[in-house]
Amino acid sequence: MAGGGKAELLEVPYFHVVFTLPPRIGAVAYQNKAVIYDLLFKASSETLLTIAADPKRLGVKIGFTSILHTWGSAMTHHPHAHMIVPGGGISLDGSKWISCSEDFLLPVLSRLFRGKMLAMLKTAHEAGRLQFFGTHAHLAHKAAFKSWLEPLYNTKWHVHAKRPFAGPEAVLAYLARYTHRVAISNRRLIKADETGVTFRYKDYRLEGPGRYKTMTVAPGEFIRRFMLHVLPKGFHRIRHYGLLASSRTKADTIERARELIKLATPPQPPRSTRPEEAPANTEATDKPIHPCPCCGGRMVIIETFEAGCAPRNRPTVMLTAIRIDTS
Image (cartoon, rainbow, N blue to C red; front, top):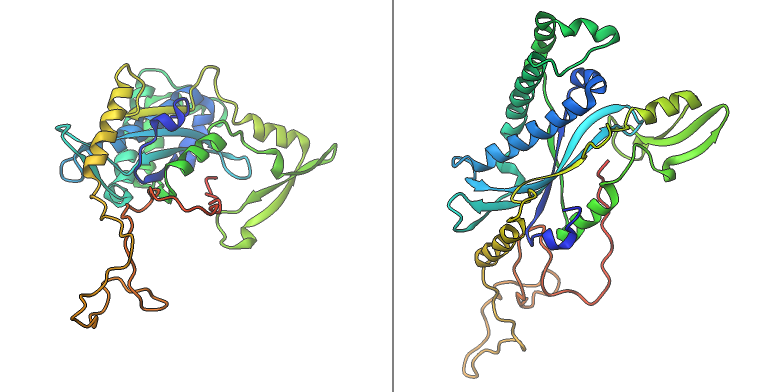
């Protein structure tokens, strides 16, 4: 989507799902960036695709874009994947578009993601793809690694949905703003000299204005934190899956999805050019079906659209931009 932009956006709600690795895995991920970050992509994408295709849940083929972030607000190592997921998919027989909300997948995402990620880590270890140094050097032994993994089966893995995007345009704005984001932006930097670097960060343990704080660290520590998030050469931090996966048929698949979405969209009622008038020989005593909450008069429905979608009848006034917290 980052490359195709608007041409790959669908007129449906978009959900924002985040998969986060537990700190225990994050500690060894730093020593195995290419392998474990790739496993994060694979485990999270397979989780979404599997649950969406389950006939007991939704029974559809979905498509989504995944973006790797490796930092917390204070530039600590915090690997997680942001998923931009259209609200629905093409039925398994390819005949229709089935809409959904983010609720269809959240209850089981965490458990399935945990199982897939741990199984992939075991396989990678058995294949000799993982390296361990310093305090983790002992994990090179199979028995030690197995014992190290055990607590993770009972650990809560965090998968959560952030607020839905306010229509396809907001998705495009998010991708433009965050796909090439680095660990810290210039606007968060307050001061830098030979004694230290001061920057703003967000304390997610708190709510309200008090969560926005400042931190000062030594120049060497600031550089160390920044370097934590340098990716291996050639590593792709933006990937597309399912209906949006890169292929020769991608454009045709997206066009087919658009056609099915149009067929699934309920027909719009004709727009009245003037208020309906009661017959001359009757009294208009019935209450309006859709009364105005202010004056009680009849409200005319000009359009019906799904939550999160942009209306086709655009207002003439300029809309206020909606800022989405994606940190």
